[in-house]
Length: 605
Image 1 (cartoon, helix red, strand yellow):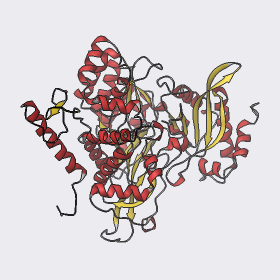
Image 2: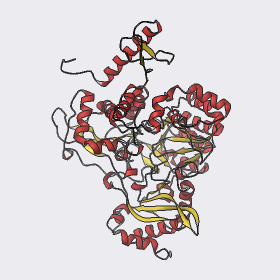
Image 3: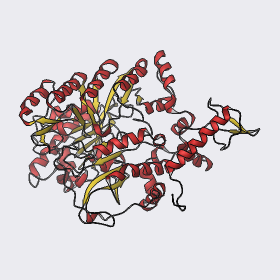
Image 4: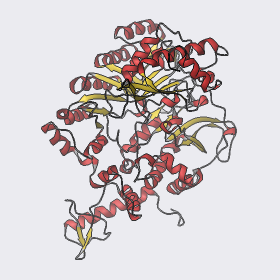
């Protein structure tokens, strides 16, 4: 390498690992340690010379270095950081096995460390584990999809939940079954490693990648490449907090890349710029965290597809080294960006990479097209002649094991044995012959599911809620289904309206980007606490990006369905035309006027 260039992070990690390995070998033979940075392979400290104790080596050296900087400043690490410092969460297999044999759940900070294996103890909401998987790009073969149904039936509740990260969850796994369940995942080739805790969550991509007539570029290969990069770079698991990455191909169905810590948005460069000829590239966006009402911001950086994974790795390392380890509420990437500003952060990323990143003004790129907000539901043509995909409506993202198997059978009989998950909590089945559409409709209806895009249920998003999460203030999935049942027959939609129902401020259902967003809360009614919701209105993403405005403080749930009905009827009656979206309508009206509509005749004013 040129003499003025230092070693990059990957080279440093390799050399550090080499030195540690050499010291382990010397320590075993009773020889002096050269680097002074390693413990013996049995875990005891090694003495350098005659009296200097050296701490055992960590499999997460960058994490330890970051923690040490805070400790050197006299600050206290969070309990989670101490837990990660004291125990390697990926060396707990025997412990998981012993606990399973004893039928007991983990205690103390081990509850947190189990999440590195994808096991979430959800007490007191449920006396069981929830398991979250890793499905890169949300695409899996039908035989694996069947495997998830099998595991849910054998070890869980017999249900499978589709999440807002194009992922799957299995619930009600008992302590005694934890190890056998993890073995079952491995037998099916399904990964759960690092699906929770302070890790990079499931990498998402445009769900119609490769079949979308409108996409600029396929993104599924990038999501898969990022997935395997994470699995094979140990430092990717030493983060201060959770982290999200999405690849958007600018197709018909949004991947919501602007809600992620790192978003890669495909754009078309209209004219050559520097060393870049005109063509399709990715714009880099950073810092999305919609629970804090922040969307990812454009950095001005333009990347070739083959650069994205390497750049993402460098961004994660800069965050890993500099994210807050003393305050969980200020530990996300957003807070590093807020404290430093984008120029300083990008400068550190360039140092990590060992090269500069090119910037191109957004005006040099073709304007983005609006997404088709109903493209994730119903039948739609693919770019492959004579083929269509179908988006299946799932009731708040939940399926029975039998329905999962039924969808797998449809994919095998009529499609290409592939299942695609979306961030809208539903499933796509691609590669259906046009001649088979009617047969597929009947097959979907036969398993108790639907494909009708005009349904209120097609835009209904709900997190787990109090039935399975200790943080939630309401049973969101049950309440969401009650909202749908109330509205169906009362309103008929000719444009999609998204209703997002989340249980707490963590906003797993991303209520701030919904046309109508609900956040669970406990409300006092006649000296009793009942389920209720805050209500926000007019959120959006993509070309309508923006956080919903607060409309109502918490009200008992029984008041919520008629309020939503009044808001939708008011929109359908008074919109400027059939092409005006609910979000656009809500934003051109004063909040007080919308509040008056919501509360009219409800004895709530």
